[in-house]
Length: 393
Image (cartoon, rainbow, N blue to C red; front, side):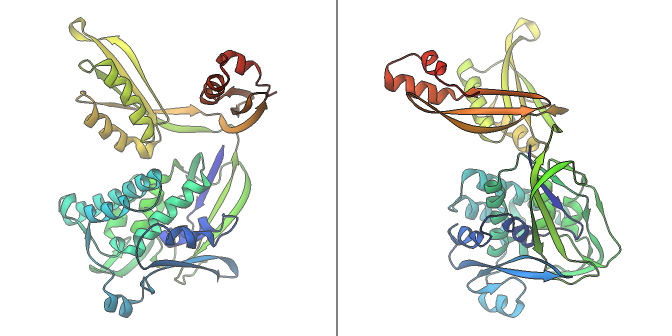
């Protein structure tokens, strides 16, 4: 299984993740063009080689109108650190020149941050406003990370327990304890520790990103490492301020998923069937509908949806909004997952895509039905005849 491993021994922030993931690219400077292309006027990035404690890695400098985050005087002069509400940020992301998957991921990360701000300030989500994390450069950090994860396309993401640090930090709200209140809210449910060096090692943005993407938190699993990347932080601590990531293959791993279920008795079959496509498009790993008999002998359906843990909340709410059910059930499950990849087989009628799945001592393959159907239609023959020409083994 293609696995991305994120090592947070020196905490995690958006810019360090951006640098580390860029270091996994064949051409690390490609991120500069990716960020420039998303469609925010005046937004640019520059990737450079940096070093901490003798370890070389990448640092990505994101600027808006030539001003980088942290340049207080220039930020004040250019006024690019505006206070934006969640709706403003979601509108900006929704209009970016990126894929729907990247938009969804970035929006969900901002919702995690907004929920934290709402909780600590005692305000509704709709009127919560962002300071540093609402700035255009911060939006670019989050969107850039989402773009890189889409490009790397891991099947699972494993994150170590996260170092937080301790002491105090200066931010837009004044002098606050470490971890900052927003970070402290976000990390609930995550394995974290203070460490033995003072300072803010983990930012709200970094915490929200790993909370959203992590399939599980643990030390390095048994894996064949293909590449290693380093993101270099700006601050100096008593330890190397670096974030390390690895991409590689784990074998025969059992992943944790959640299953969402609900009973439906007053929707048409067409509407129920169409919703399967909707929930799959929004990140579900699998979905099915089973006919059943409900109370008072009424015919109904059992809707089941399997998903990663970080997608559970969004998909549960999607089901409540788009079906007639008034409640859902959630179960934690272990899932034996075979890793899959696509190959192409040349036949006398043309190329046919083949999905190959392997794992746990089993190997199987299946020709892509859409290719079989297209070739059969173009050649006036049956699908089974095309399938008989697919010789994969």
